[in-house]
Length: 349
Ligand SMILES: [Zn+2]
Image (cartoon, rainbow, N blue to C red; front, side, top):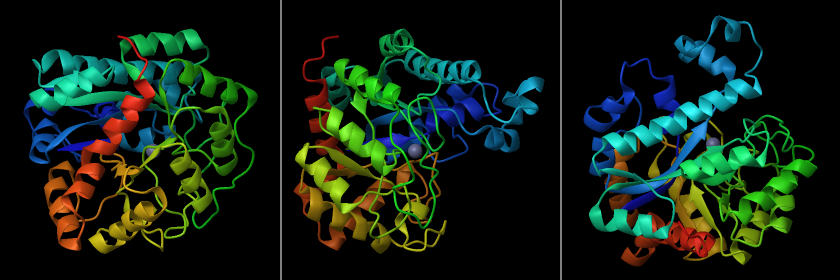
């Protein structure tokens, strides 16, 4: 049974040119790396589903049908456009839940997650990756009411919440200033609502700002080890220690560019490259801090783990590698469950 810390399904549904992408997700095979059938084959019972506005340049190349004539001439999306795109993705999640007839559930608290584990329905926890679209906390409350339970304030570019990380390689995570005053206020606002605050796309200073403000566990939903792959987005030992002290979790990102020492997108990447990151995480975080954060539908994967239905093979490989059943259960679902429980503990529906 798998709970996965990060996927970009909703952004892909938004970019799809299909007439009815929700129907494709629920009943057919979607282009990309996941749909309901493959989630079941992969024994994936849930995960954090990102709401994410892709860079305009990317949308121009890969999904230009989504753009108005005005957007074609813009350099970047406006805040209002971002808001509409995020809302459209939240609507996709709600529509999936509604049309799935119980097969998919948007989870708002730990009881919902528990129900999904018991009934084998797919647990969607809605996560916002990059909060540029939000201009005030009442909008955050609107999305909270629709099911949003996790926020990554920043993506790669600078915003009203903080300075950019930019995903440079090779580069240290120290890419400049951290959170703005507003960004710091919003960390507190998210924690007040018992939402997860994700540090995965924060530069080093933003990470430490967040660490100082949070009393809840620190989560990096999809990040890897900087010492093994010197991508600016990966975590330093000092950051891992802070995550451990907070009883937090790191979800391992499967994108080969965040795993390999050469930072390459390489389809031939073997399990051993991924497992070195797992070993390192266990050494620093102990048994309770390590989980999956695959980045399916958003990452460049190896031929050994190209899509969610390959999870069982990955688990067999971890077992062959020598990981105990207990450790594998911790990675697969227990550690996400525990940290969600901790953060949502006082949450009432
Ligand atoms: Zn990401």
